[in-house]
Amino acid sequence: MTTLTAAPLADLLNRLFEEADAAEPETVAAAADLSDEEEARMRRSKTDYVEFYGRLKNLPLPVSRETGALLYMLARSSKARSIVEFGTSFGISTLHLAAALRDNGGGRLITTEFEPSKAARARENLTAGGLIDLVEIREGDALKTLSVHLPETIDLVLLDGAKALYPEILSLVESRLKPGALIVADNADMSPDYLERIRSPGSGYKSVPFADDVELSMRL
Ligand SMILES: C[S@@+](CC[C@H](N)C(=O)[O-])C[C@H]1O[C@@H](n2cnc3c(N)ncnc32)[C@H](O)[C@@H]1O
Figure 1 (tube, protein in one colour):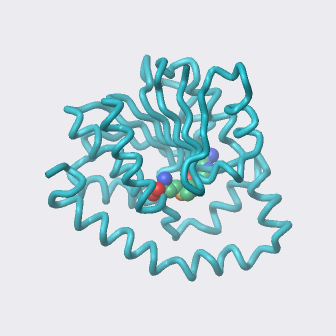
Figure 2 (cartoon, rainbow, N blue to C red; figure 1 turned 30 degrees about the vertical axis):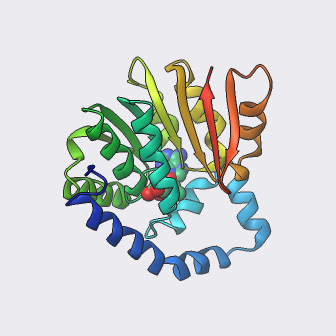
């Protein structure tokens, strides 16, 4: 058994994913309120993301079940002890990553979320999952919260907040990435600037698209 597949986490994650599935029509409806151009502008904008995610503040928007499992596997196989996450929401990805830390023998996960109600729900879920002792939830905009007090070295990063900010967040953590550190960027196809940077020769990363919606990169 692993922390991921044992009580209380296995049942908790099943319930959270089922609730996220049930919220899917609401998620689609929230996006449908916006025209395609409006949505594209908000996603691309380095300022309108606050309004965009404000509209979605009651929705979990989690990584897929497969990406959750992938995060756990990558953190386990890389023996990660130090993880940074951009975009906590209700904490579903955070639970996978913290479970890996537990099974690696401990560590520290810094995650950040600017919607206070979401940060509170993530805290509840991490407490219910018995993992809150491994996690620091920084409430506020990641551009600020991740600009200070980062660990000396970082083993794994999950980028899953506002897509337009992926390059900026990478810049904040870059000097702390140890050689071999992994960066998982969810829905990276919505962040062309990020893809151009991380895939460019001489960028200091090896990077591949993985499954449909993930860019998996390694610091060289
Ligand atoms: C796709 S959801 C994250 C889902 C989460 N990783 C999971 O799998 O459960 C993106 C979250 O990032 C938050 N967010 C977006 N931009 C942010 C920023 N600049 N700083 C902090 N949080 C941000 C949003 O409020 C939203 O809850």
